Amino acid sequence: MSPFRFKPLLIPLSVLAIAGTAQATEWNMATPYGDASFHTQNVKQFAEDVAEATDGELRINVHSGGSLVAHGEIKPSVRRGTVEGGEIFLSILSNEDPIFEIDTLPGVAGSYDQAMALWETTRPMIEELFAAEGLMPLYAVTWPAQGLYTREEITDPEQFEGLRVRAPNINTQRFVQNLGGSPTETEESDIPTAFSTGRVDAMITSSATGNAMTAWDYLSWYTEANLWLPKNIVFINQRAFDRLDEATQDALLAAAAQAEARGWQMSRDNNAASLQALQDNGISVVAPNEAVAEALQAAGAQLFADWQARASAEALALLEASRASLEE
Ligand code: PCA
Image 1: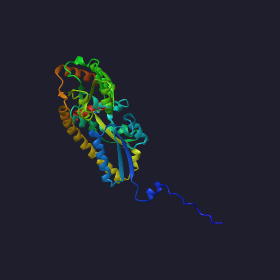
Image 2: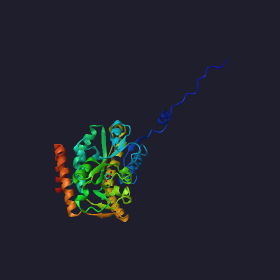
Image 3: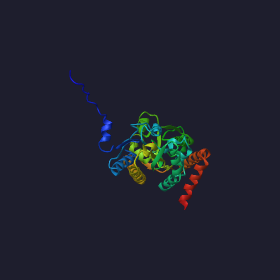
Image 4: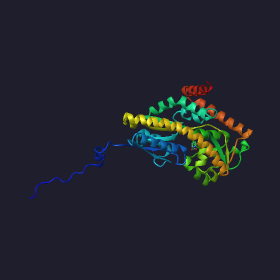
């Protein structure tokens, strides 16, 4: 009889990885915007910077265009920790607190300097609200100013009556309603289909999105209404951050600060390039005439008054602080 022998026992692969060189951390980052967006290019650069600064110790895989998680699910997923990081259009959180839509109000942030002042003053409150959910904001970057894309030139406010306008958030929908139009919320990536299936006649968005979504395929006019400069925010799961060693945490935060500065410059540059691309492809870029400007102003005043009625004393005080900081 042959002696008893143990069968070879298998060592799980995960154990082998730990036993080898120190195990690198791998994160997933979900974003809603496509690769043509400067925001996506910026967050991908951020991921590369982190990998380089940490010698590959922290690798962030960016899943763009809603390919991993749909826009509305990104924040809940990062909160649960199913994905470690995410990027969203900040104002889609407006139903959680009116502070999140402060950058989609007329007369609040109509220039890059005003938009930056607004971010600086509201950042602590926004960070606090995120922290209460176990989330840590890394950086925020503004889109270029929002304007109106149409098939026909808008010369008379009556043309807003019944106009079906695609909007990226609730406040923009309210604004369209105030103008007499009929708003629909549509994700950026669904814009071409919304037009090709005849669901919408017009859209409110930036030069950047018009360019990335080749607006000239279905629209002919861009009215530079300069409504507001709304932001995207990039954030991570706090527990995932806490698990990193200190040197990696520092490298991540340094890369985030760089991504914020780079992103704001990219936004300015992209705005100029996109306005040019729109015109090169046959879109007429115009300023609103007096009557249209008046109608926009009135719709904006109503939007602002409604927001003021909803906003907390803290949010209102921050808005005042932001305005005051520019007057200094
Ligand atoms: N582009 C995004 C958000 C704002 C913008 O300029 C969009 O239209 O969905």
